[in-house]
Length: 322
Image 1: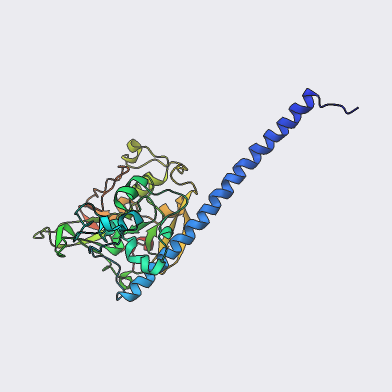
Image 2 (image 1 turned 90 degrees about the horizontal axis):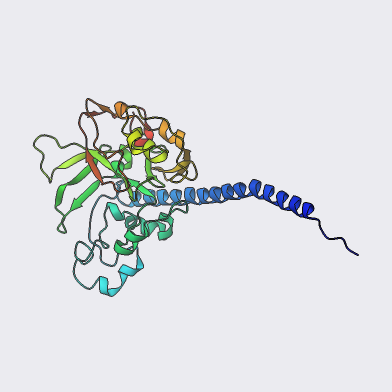
């Protein structure tokens, strides 16, 4: 007659299974994050390559216009006839889904990428509400407006609201001191639902709302440290800010992927990314930036600053240096 397991034997087996699970589950979770990270790096590289190809067709310049293009929405929902049966519909009339602007910069690269899903990363979901209501991909790969520029215009093409912002590098690849380092994209801006890295600019004496302003990327360490680490809003406002551990809830891979101007992409740990980013007192002399450093989740496309930008500092990831 076969002997049944004793209670102690069953408890031993259960304990062994529990120990193995405790060991293996974190390994499986890490493997899953690693796979998502690899896909993210691949997507950012392909988007960077698409921008490189775009630039080749447009005399070395990055996209900076704001045309209205009917049936151009990235969301198939807004390509239906009912959303495109009136002139300029979706360009301030009934929504903004047909604009080609900094909120929907992906449209410029679609002829080169051929795949909308490349603009999304598996490490972070796009904002479903904004996608459904406006057709914008928010919370994923972000374009560095400080190197590409902004041009908010009327439907007739006239600049409005200090919206004509030309990058300090000229808005083209030739103006970048180091194309192999310059960050045109990051895989996302944590703790926000944006699709871009904002600019900072300064209105000079005599300039009007239609004047072209010079823009620089929001490229100082305090802005990024708050978004990449477990820093509270109160701690963000401290000077100096405290050193905090990586916020795995917003940065699950403990780093960020940078898409470069030469079409390449590289994953950087949080520490490496911050080391390549100047502190505010390195970037600005005699002033400060009003870039909502400690505000989440909504950030605007541009903010003002006072003082003088030090473009000769050696931080090529942001376009600075000789």
